[in-house]
Image 1: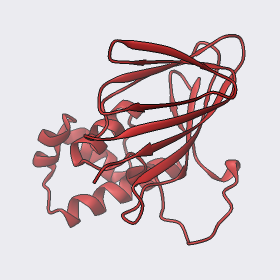
Image 2: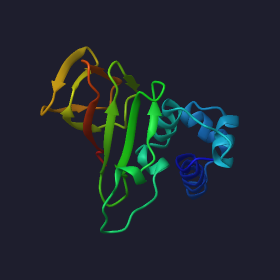
Image 3: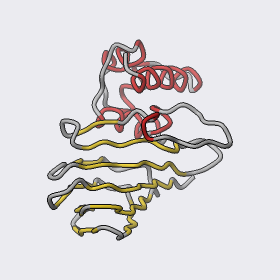
Length: 184
């Protein structure tokens, strides 16, 4: 089992036990089958990014609370030490750099999208916002009926409690920082 699936397995089991949530109830809350949830908890599953988002949205918790370990008060995060979450046949790579915890109401990712990569994201929890800074390439973002492009050096903020998508447009890999802020 790779490191991120191991973390997901441990975190999901812990959250479910703390909340005294049965697999049946969790399945109803998330729209993920009971058998898939059981496989994930046993470390036998290899869920897609979309499945993990369904679980986090159903539990009303940030994505990184499921896939990350808690960190100490001071640290330097080396990109090579963070297991990425893949989508679009690994053309989309999200590195959960600073995961969500109860004391802060945000999480931070470093993201790479190869040219032509796309990710369709489900709505996050009510009140969630995304803050994106593009370091290289061009990123097309679609939120509801709005569509806009952010180029190298541009920054974007939007309400992320509606379905939205990202696409790398242009010929180079798009690299960006994404902060997701959660209203509590």
